[in-house]
Image (cartoon, rainbow, N blue to C red; front, top):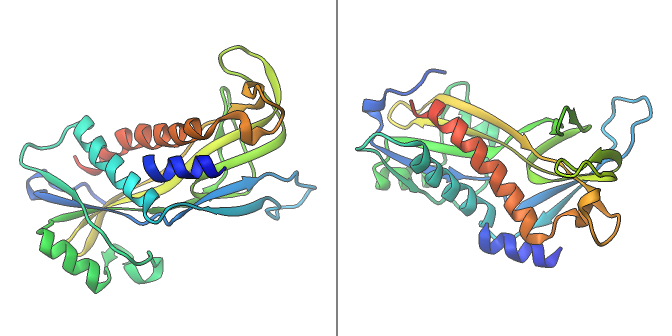
Length: 244
């Protein structure tokens, strides 16, 4: 786990009119923790019985990684020739009730000043999104409870096959990325579009050559890569919708 966290820290409405997009600021406020969700079998109750824990990462490692991935994704999918994009920093936390009131966006004064100094016309804002667990397998989806942010879901009872060899194993490790991206028109102070992302993948414990613990199905570098692949794939699909 320690090696994984060190690697993560180091690696880690309507569409807008394209004529109005000149300079985009990118801000990710996902927090400094990964979420580990340990599935516990339910016994006929709707109560979420999973065990949730938070694993701290280096300060801003996740946010910096998300902002970088957004910038790189905009380059992959293509942007209008005159559009600039740049990350912006904000040291505080995202407070849902205070920042959004319907379509209206009211950022803290410190953030508003930073975007003014950047001369940004729009903001791409990324924050955690909470939604029911829908973890993708080869032919369906599994999971219970809710997921939010970035992390890993562990089920020690579920039996699934390796996608490549068909080998069956009992236990699964599922990286997930649950977040939302807003495009905000800063001149109007309004949210003009948003995309909710609920991405996941599953790795059967049959991949684990060292034992039966699902957590060890992927090593530290593979865990980081699995999260980044999810994020990149989803951003490549979401950004063309956000930046028509």
